[in-house]
Length: 131
Image (cartoon, rainbow, N blue to C red; front, side):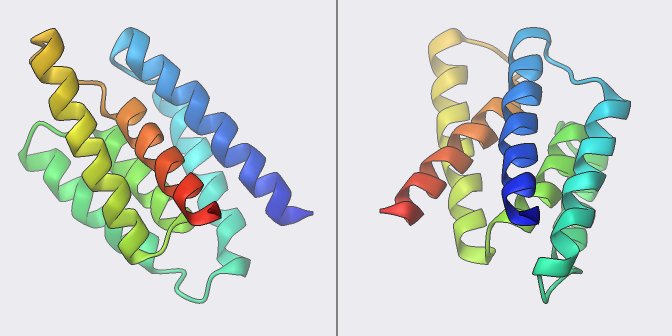
């Protein structure tokens, strides 16, 4: 039951915050961070490597601090690390980068909402894993 709740919260939140980022180029900080924390805490009993998402979050937080990556993108990477193993997470990030480059090239935008691209990458990797 908890696993189904976690899956519903993950995909529902990812869709909502992805839509928010796509339409407004920002996400509301408090609900987003609470959602990230909730997903992480729900994943602790099901994962042996409870510290791995924290490492992903810390690494991407450093990137967010020194580059043009948003803090919400760093938080979401930590959440994605609770849902995907190492190699599938790398595929999610690669797909997000690829779709982001296509988006930037076609629409000639300098600032990209990366959360929708992470959502697309997550969906593609999940569908491939189900096949």
